[in-house]
Length: 562
Image (cartoon, rainbow, N blue to C red; front, side, top):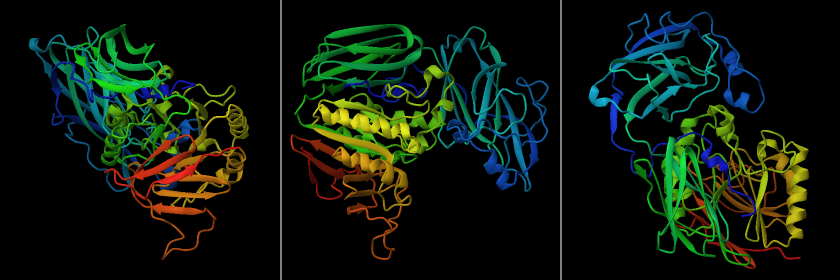
């Protein structure tokens, strides 16, 4: 590849030990069924129109507003917080008519015996709505969606249903022999009338792998693999060509480890595994990239959002397709602001990310990752974009052998900078005489789904794509499959990655005539993924259901030639 693939695959927070041998047995400290005491602050219920103004973290992340609107009324934390509260409520009740629970302060205790000493890492697992903070014995150990103002503000974004795990190093004095206090503060967003939560706390004596390994990129004779561990943990990567695992690379104690594998066999197979602390990854396999003129196979899918069961089936199916690359048309998660959503995403895609390079166009639901992180150094980061690309925009391009991929940011279609970049990028690709050009975006120009295609994409970007004879445009956003040719380009809508499917809105019996002439050639309301097999003169396009069956007969698309 000409540029490194998405470094974002390590940047969205920590996932659990999915796919890896656990780093030693867990010591349960606080069970989900533990007894809690709660103190509540209530306030008048927000009018719906005011609540709409007060949200959301996504608005903040995308620059539509600079801060949440505080509309909470009066209330302060308990005087002895975070060690004790004044209330004796054992669970957070639903809000009463006309009221909302503006904040909930909860405490529970657990006992640490001499047999439990020596814990190195704590795992705090929470489902919560919508902003939360937690303290252990008065020490703050997590905060999400809550400003440190001391006021009872609204959570600054809505948090989704996924559980989030927080990894907490055990510093001296954090835990005590005998009684320990875990305190949780919860605030709803403007879209809810009360917060909710479930909480578990466990400890580990051994450190280990937290995320990965992930194949960052693979070239013709080299590759980079990254793994994230608990803090101050050394890592070892063992690898070899073919069936052997006879070479070793070591990484000093740290949290993030990047291994560069040089002098790999051209068009060859590599096996590897990673050990860190008390955990070891499975043994994975990947292939170095094909060369110019070789057959290249690329998997494409999009719009996962909360459809985890379908997503898992698609990942398993794609692993059986001998792919050289996987591309995503956006909306990998439901809430880009939720670290929990990204944790679930990485847990499901772990075996795919370990063996196949993975790149993505950014969807509207993916926005907001910076608000899910605790520091800018951990932010969701794309490959280096063109010089002068505005902060918060995400267009870029890359080469896979002699195949050129351009990724558009449909969240920024209105920016002339992106149009100018695309024109220059495609012109340079054609000047290099690349074999094929593929363009991925989230919100495409044509669709018969709910969104019905983007006017900006049709009027501003399709003419550029047609002028440089782009071989195929792939988009998502609408949760269906559609293939066609219009405006001088061939296109596919592939939004069947797991999210709830959309109805076909026009152009079929019982529906009205479509307002846009989209040249539709095939359409289906089904979950699916696509395999592109790019040869010397044509692309074979095969759309497959999660069980691998064809959605329609494979289609041959001749490559453009001058």
